[in-house]
Length: 238
Image (tube, rainbow, N blue to C red; front, side, top):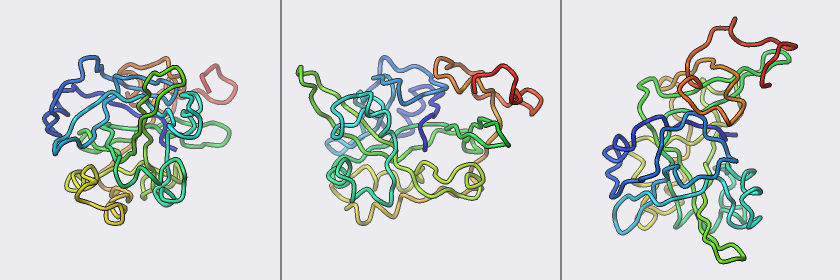
């Protein structure tokens, strides 16, 4: 599962990187984005009228199965291998593909009875695009909810010892094909949902404060030594 990720870059950086046509005024740097933190400040890139734009989307609120953002927390991920089989996603693959800018994500490495949080990122520390799907629906009271899900794929050699899935990180040269559903069929775009080469990525242990979504500062991604990680029986957030 890829449910926790970071967006610790300035919006101006991704506006230039992806040639976005507007600002996101309420955007703030994020160091610990969790599924339950539904927020219009999380940037999601979609294709619109031949260009890239960032509308406001709410993280993980599933548009079909629940009509309820709390249920959507469990739908933050969609498996690349079964997108065309799942009722919640199969009608979106040909028209509502999106990309979520990020600069890292968290996974938890098992060591005996404890789980050690790790921050995974590119060696370059540059932002990258997570492949996703988006949709919009209306609440019974009439309010509009925009939502997205992050697509996962098989792990690469770096992630495999930690977890059996990883987010589908798009190569820069593949991003336009993924976003432009009018020109690239899903049959072709599906081949882009593959593990990013392990040699482009790195990971390090971080503090267990990331286990709690209330912590959302730069300290979340700072490297820690093994001595800094609480053992079983010690006071921690595990």
